[in-house]
Structures are given as C-alpha cells and as structure tokens.
Image 1 (spheres, helix red, strand yellow):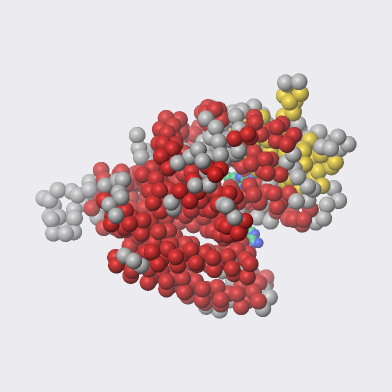
Image 2: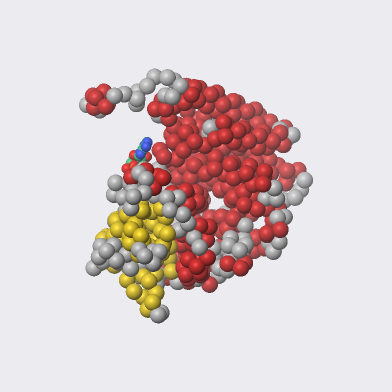
Length: 605
Ligand SMILES: Cc1cc2nc3c(=O)[nH]c(=O)nc-3n(C[C@H](O)[C@H](O)[C@H](O)COP(=O)(O)OP(=O)(O)OC[C@H]3O[C@@H](n4cnc5c(N)ncnc54)[C@H](O)[C@@H]3O)c2cc1C
C-alpha cells in the first residue's frame, strides 16, 4: 500500500499548531475531544485505504462514458456515496436534530484531506452533495429541507452547483437561464448549464441541481439572479417522474476523468420545475456560501493531490539507485556503489520543496477550518465577526496557493521519478493531470486574485488586513523567544513590511480611480501575499515543533519535530525571497499590459 498522506502531520497541526481546544471548548462541540478526533482520522485513513485508494487509478482509466443521453461513471461511486451516507460523513457538521453530528469544520477538513489524497475523483460526489445540502439548509424553507436534504445526507441522492453557462463563466452577471413563475409557487426553468460536475450519472437515484436563473423581469446583472432547487426527478407516489433535465453531453477531460462534467439542458420540453430558495434576486449572495466552502475544498483538493505526489516521489527516491555521490565517496569512481537518488542534493531540494508546499497548505487549510468554526460558534458576536472577516480574506489564498504551487510541487514529484514519472506505471502523471483543473474551477486564479486585491485586502478600509497582521505579529513574538528561530522572524518582518509598502503603492491607483492600473497585476500580488501567508504557517509549525522539543511534549520521535524546523528554514531560503521579486514588479509603474485595443493587436503581432 503506497502512502499518500501523513496523518501524523495532520494530528500535529490540529493538536500543537492550531490548538483546536479553542474550538472544542465551545458548548456545541461538547461531545468531541482531541482523542476522539484523532480516532476519527485513523478510521478515515483505514476506510480510504480500503474503499478509495485502490480505485484511484481505475477511475481514471474507466473514465465517464456518455451514451444515448446518459452518463455512466465507475460503479464504486455508488458504494462511496452510500458508505458516506451510512456513516454520516456527508454533512457531519449539521445539527444533531438535522441528522448531523455537530462535527467541527476543522476536523471535517482534516478528514477530507485524507480521503481526497486517497482518491480526489471519488470524493467530489459526496463533497458537492454536502455543499448543495448546506445551501438548502441555510436559505430554503423547512419543507424544502425535508423534501430533499435527508435523501442527500443518506447518499441516495447527489447534489450539484449549476452556475456556468456557455456565455457566463467567470462573469456570472451574464447568466440567461430563465425562471417563469407557476401558480403553484414553483417556477418553469429553461436554459443550458455547462461544465456541471457530477451533473448526471447512474450512481445516484436522483440529482438535485442548485441552479442560478433569472426570474422574468428581474433586474439585469448580479442583482437579478435567483437560486432554485431543480431535481432531475420528481418523486410522485414513490415513483420517479422526469423533470425535463436532459444531458446533452459529457466533457472529455485532461484529468479527474472519473469525475463527470456535464452539459445539462433544463426545460427542453418546457416542463422543468424549480423551487425558489429564499428570496428572489438574492441567489448569487446565497450561492457565495457554497462557493466559499467550495473554494476551500478546491484548495484542499489541490493540497491533497500534491500530498499524494510528494509521498509517492519520496518513496521512489528512497528506493531508486542512480549515479554516485559528489562527496568524495563516489564521484567519477565507477567502482563505487550507486547511491540512492535521495542522496543527491537536487533530488532532496525537489522533495523538500514538496514537503514545504504540502504541509504549508495543510496548515493554512486547517487554520481556515478553525476560523470557520469560530465565525459560527465563537462566544461573542465580536469574535464571530473577526474570524468571519479573516476567513474572507484568506479564502482566495487558500484556494489559489495550493492550486498553483501544488501543481509546481506535483511537477517536482514527477521529476523525482525521471522517465518513470511520465509513464502510467506510476501515479505521478495522473496526479499532475488531476491537479491542473484546480486553478480553473471555482473561480480562476485571475478571478481569485482580483477578489484578494480588489475586495479583500481593502475590506473595512484595510482593518481586516490589519487584523491578519496582528495575528502574524503575535505568532512572531512567540517564535522570537527561541534563538534558533529569530533570524527567520526578522526575515518575516521584512516580508511583511514589503507587503505593506506594495499595498500602499497600489492603493494610490484605487484612490485615484485608476482601477485598471490598480488591478492589472493582481495575480502577482496574490503570489506575494500567498508567500507571506505560507511563511507565517511555517513560523507557526516551527514554533510548535520547538515548543514540543523544549518542553519534552513530543508524541512522535524528535526527528519529526526537527524536520518541521528544517523545512521552515528551507521555505525561508528558497521560497520566501520570491516576495522581493514580486514586489519589484508590482512597484514598477511601467504599464505593458494596459494598452489600447489597437496597441494590443500590435503588441501580439
Ligand atoms: C472540469 C470542470 C468542472 C467544473 N465544474 C463546475 C460546476 O460543478 N458548476 C459550475 O457552475 N461550473 C463548473 N465549472 C466551470 C468553471 O467554474 C469555469 O470554467 C470557470 O469559472 C472559468 O469560466 P470559463 O471557463 O467561462 O472561462 P472564462 O471566464 O472565459 O475565463 C477565461 C480566462 O479569462 C480570464 N478572465 C475572465 N474574466 C476576467 C476578468 N474580468 N479579469 C481578468 N481576467 C479574466 C480568466 O481568469 C481565464 O484565465 C467547471 C469547469 C471545469 C473545466
């Protein structure tokens, strides 16, 4: 059995780095403690070893097949959905009286990391179902909740998010799917949705599409978009009756080939009914709840794929002999034994880059999970608001950094395997194909970066960013108490000062109304801020490791904690300096991408 995740590292994050006792002490989570959560992680790993990991490659090879208007996916998906349903894994964060187990989000995220690293294809189906059920729970009536959610939580019915249309991808204001009111309170839905994940397959008895549409006469743009529940089937007297949702096709893809991506047509026969969720014209606001959750999930998917790539390449590097060491024991001496490739510094660099990215991302995602819990259940309204805002600020980074650097990390994993990495004999080529989508769906990197710089960084006149800086500075004060960590704290302080300088520079354009200039290089700003945020995670992890060693509160061998400190040093030597070059670009006022349309034509001549 190949290793795809470090459960020990997840436990270290929950216990020592992000101290989830802050969350577990809240009355809502009275039935949980650290031991019970660690036991859940161990059982999730066992289940993933048995039901998810063995099917990972097969699901890619079998793919999804479209024939005569229906799609067939790997049959194990049905078993996974039922298994998730029976074990209460689909919406474990729901209240007890809703059928949930009031599990903290932070624990659910850690469990998701394990299962996604095992098989990123299979977990998409229950994941989307959970998001759709959550949206119904938050905004629809109790009747609609009772009509749809229990079957979704049991894994019998699947769920989707149906936003994208051929002309409306990044810009949802251009949605044209229409909704016409009926006398019975339902709406007739007509339109097409493309790229809908898990939109049709044989493994769920019914599929519930959370669909964005425009009610006739609604205002133009985002203020006229409403949210509807559109089931594939109505259930009448226990029988399934078609709701006129047809499948026009399945997109053949580069990766995640077992995770179906559909082209859906609603109301081809003018007989597709939808149920309005909440108030009319507030659909996009509601959908943002699902999208924010889904953005964290996409970040988690990317980090988990990179984790599987790291573990596979680490295992290979420990077993593959090639060449001789440069340290005098080998070199050009052909009679010396071949060395394992893990002994070559360049291979170690590739492995360490992966470790620094994977564990840095895992730390950020667990922190976001903690903030999510505190934003809902912290004791005071003030605290709830603080953590809600911090989460809003960090979400675009938690989606984008794992997607972009996880891909680079996975590519390094493939490189460690040399020629074998490019073959189907090893999982690296599939992981590399699978991770590529994460920078595209749920808002591309470009769109996330616009969100970070254009909305989040200046939210509440910059007060939220200041609150983040306060959190970072507080962690730096603790880290600074250890001599070994002081040089890195100093480097971090410089990076923070650089980020402030860059933001002050860019804000001048916003204040002058020059929005194109303000936002033109938002993606470079994202790179800069991501580096700062991940460096912060490494300061937190190295401090927690140091504390565990100094106070002799280690639950693993000391080398595990020393490796955390070593990897922090690696990140600060190889990755954090990228802040400087990003800042240089952002402070340079030469405008090469802001030109007139005619000049642009010439620029690409
Ligand atoms: C495999 C897969 C699964 C998907 N699953 C779902 C799903 O379940 N539900 C769903 O609703 N959708 C889904 N999508 C759709 C996905 O969210 C969109 O593809 C994505 O949001 C990008 O939209 P687009 O493809 O129309 O690209 P476009 O919006 O046309 O973007 C093309 C390029 O232009 C850039 N761009 C666009 N607008 C701007 C701007 N204003 N400023 C700067 N740059 C800009 C983008 O960053 C991108 O680089 C899925 C897509 C895929 C491929």
